[in-house]
Length: 191
Image 1 (cartoon, rainbow, N blue to C red):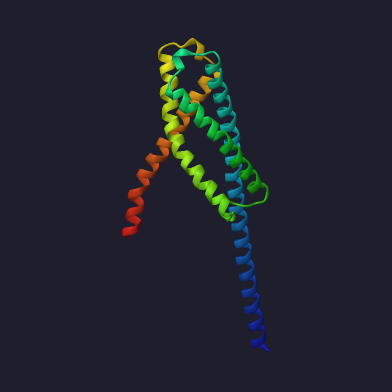
Image 2: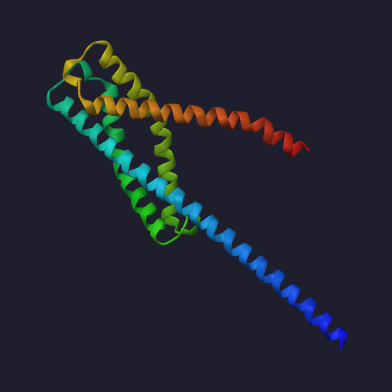
């Protein structure tokens, strides 16, 4: 009889251990899902903010064209205009995708459609063009400020200027952090 009690006691411990491991795994999965949902929510909020700022920027560019502002009539204004006309629909599509992912508890890797892969490739290309746009926008607005162009003065100009400065700063910080992390990653690979 004592051996049966030992077996029963041992099986209860194994059962409790499996149950505890299962609860831990469930807890980690829920925590990961909540983190992914938070990231997606952050993307949605950032997308809405970026969309609003870019819409105001294109309105400002159209205003400059309508009033025939001579001091802003150059290739930079044209570049910014066409970039904004390209990026606004991309932001809208990305926003819709993020809302879909958020409400269906999915992540980007869950979408395996070849059309989506093509879209990501195109959006990545536009992002590279966006890096150029940040620099051009800062230079363009800065030159307008230097020559005291009164016809370009607008709160939309200032918001777009600050927006591009913030984006440039975030990109610089990201690059610096990446460059700082590379030696650490290499040292871990060597060990």
